[in-house]
Amino acid sequence: MAENLQKVSIQFPTCESPDLELVFITSLSFLLYDFHSIYYLSLRLQYAKLAWVLPLMHFRGLREVRLYICMRAGNDLPASPLIPGMLLRFLECLRPSLEALTIWVFDYEFISQISQSLCHEGAIMRKVRELSTRLSFQNPRAFEAISTNYPLVTKLALTPVINMEPSPFLEDLRLPELRTLRLWMPKRVPGFWRGASSSSLLDELYVTTAAHMPSEEVAGLCRFFRHTKITRFSISVEVLYARLIDLLAGSFPNLRSVTLKVRYLMQSRRLYDERDLSSFREEMRRRRYPDWRELSRFSLSFYGSDIPAAAVISILDGSLPNVEFEDEAIHFLPR
Image (cartoon, rainbow, N blue to C red; front, top):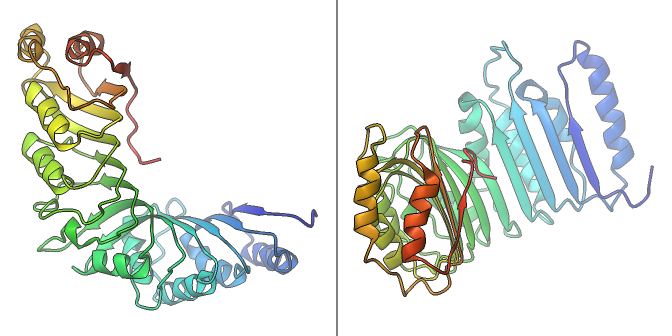
């Protein structure tokens, strides 16, 4: 084995001989423990294996850790009360060196356990710059806990799983160094965009929603981020019409790249009609956007409809003549 080993990726398959698997991973962990060159660890495993795998993975000097946790198909194993404490001890061991942390749980039943560990007062990770996770909100102070535990995060990818009333507000997330924010919203959350973002250095914003955003929610999002200087922006919207372009241009004048994933043109909840295209053309005919001096890329895609994207792009091209347009496939999950 090379002495300069830097990256370790382990995927645990479904195994009918857990004792043999435990012997193997124990031997492997002891073998790897003295490799101080290892800085990256990726684990893909079933929830049932966390209890005996995590205590073996306390390598020194890790800077990037990725955990992908799932349940075996057909496994109805209940959540173990030991997991939050075990994960917390794992995070505490990583604290001196960790800079990037990804924890993805593919079963909503166990997201709350992971969130409990990430938000614990003992999980303060001041060196972490990149954080990607699903976060369960059963505590209204979860955003505040993330802000306290990971104060210097510059890249954040977050899926808020909200099961409480009243719902939390994004304004409670206070990360002064944040540059890139990716949000995957499983459902609409009333009042989520209340207030204003305090992340004045935010440069990239990507918002993907299970249900495309209606116009009033897009307006709320734009108000929330109005004090930032976003240059890259992606959003899923319900309806494309001229006033939406006006809103984006007025809210984010520093944009260099914008991606719109759209469901309808002009009219919501109806099949495409050529009259919609004519109406959009008429609305955009005299519109120009001189404040968008830096905009160079505009990506447009329509989901679940027969709207001719090329025709819509040709209309937008008349109002934004110096912009490169793309008709792009839709990405449903944050990258």
